[in-house]
Amino acid sequence: MRKEKSIQQRYGSGRKSRSLDLRKKLAILGVGFLLLVAGFGAVGFIVYKALGRADFFQITATNIEGCRRTTKNLILEMSGVDVHSNLLALDIKRVKAGIEAHEWVESVEIARDWPNRLTIVVKERLPVAIASLDNGLFYLDQNGVAFAQVLPPEDMDYPIITGMKREEWPRNLKDSQLGAALQFIKYAGQGSSILPKQNISELHVDGDENIILYLVDRPFPIDLGTGNVGTKYYWLTKVLYKLYKSKEFEKAAYVRMDYGRNQVLVGFDEAG
Image (cartoon, rainbow, N blue to C red; front, side):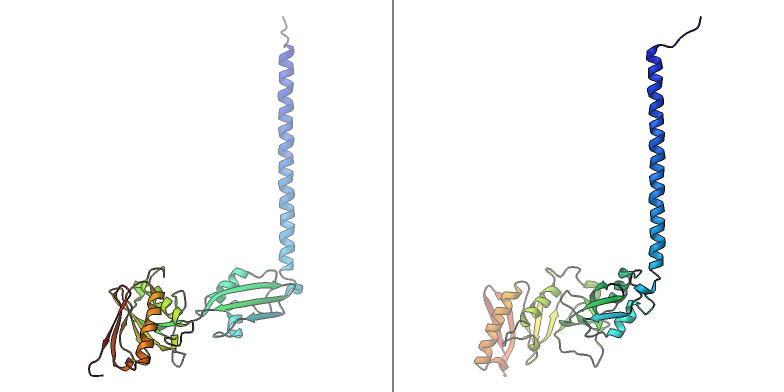
């Protein structure tokens, strides 16, 4: 006897067949879409490479701003940009890294001026002090970076910070002796006629976490102690004002700003 399939079996087989056909169609469409995207990508890449060699985008002028210690010619040389450079194909990150490799350069901003001009704005480091290290004198910026060696006859009219070593250099200025010394210099640079920045000869950082200040006009030790830099600067200006006014400045032998709470100890030279 011939066996016949039930109606349910026949319908079930049809649904399975239609499901397989749908999957095949979706797979074909997916592959086609990927090929289309790849084709557009390949065409776009070819067009980009062609434009990257086109004379239309060839750089004809490079505007360089912000040079003080550096020169425009030096910055242009370090940028690697020349008359053969293409503005579209230019690797901005590479140009930026090349310029920022210079010790006096803190940061660089680069802008494309389409179709064939380039603008480079240089932000140079500003020295606020000089650090005396084992291998020489180095300019210090406000962030505590010893960035360039001082070579005569370069400008040395900055406060000198002594007592620091490379291996002891703080990773974070906050709560560090170096940070406190730079903060003191910052206060002095805000226009006080009693204790201006120009009258700071040396700030010595010792192993006891104290900072010793020496003035230009008379280098006796002024022990700043630790902490409360702004308050100590304020009180020191008051003390110096009284010493100047009373004609006792020439007799001063030392000053201790950490003598006690709200107290300053001034020692005098008996022979003065």
